[in-house]
Length: 320
Image (cartoon, rainbow, N blue to C red; front, top):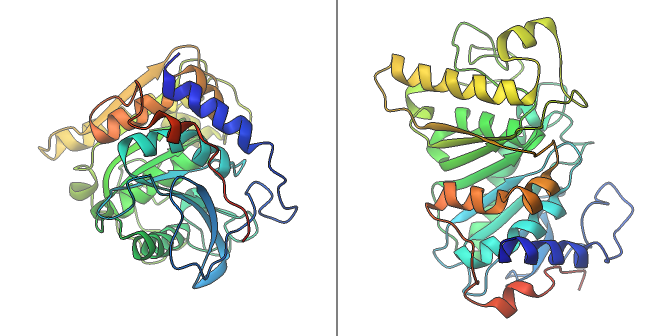
């Protein structure tokens, strides 16, 4: 097993020993003071947005600091396991020297974050991420402009829809094990296609732009169960009946859409044998960390970190 994967597993075990609050943010560690002018390095820090303290997020700044660093965003699934995402990806962020951001989409405020936030079903999740990134860049001096985006399951739904709607903000994306997808079909209303829909006010999709964003689609070869999977005759006809089928079919549809416009295909698909619908299993047994950082940053992050001692320390901050 790769060293970084082992370190991530140890890190998660340490995180799970921390006493967590019992409020809606029970999946998160105690919050660090919002008034702090800086974010500590080498710690997974839980913050509330200064402009809206009901919006929470996690951030990790590597040892070398955030000045000019790229930003990596990881989006959780419907279990709201933002802490697990942050703790398992932190060793990779340390090695790569990137600022890690894990937004927390509270079920009471972001009921439908997977679709970016429908009218009457919670606030706009894409706008929330914009506000989080603005604050993180202000505090860390991380690189402005395009960022690197990953999502798993419900987070993969959010990630690919964010990319389709805001391609100018995303450098590269990895979409893993989404339950269902928005297809690049202008004749079909959103969220099944990219046609106009009143539930996402002001949304305008531009295929020529989003098809230029490199997107890697990952799915476990054993991810064929139906638990928490949206099903309907219409959806099954369009996309398939399992996450595996739907991932393959969406990647193929994106490639066809690019070819029809004379554009270079930027979407790749990979099926990972033996992996079921589990973020933790994918990370610890399927090499997801290496796959994600390899796809986003162009090389594997496996091997000895630049600072092995730093990468193996617990990465959590509480109130102060």
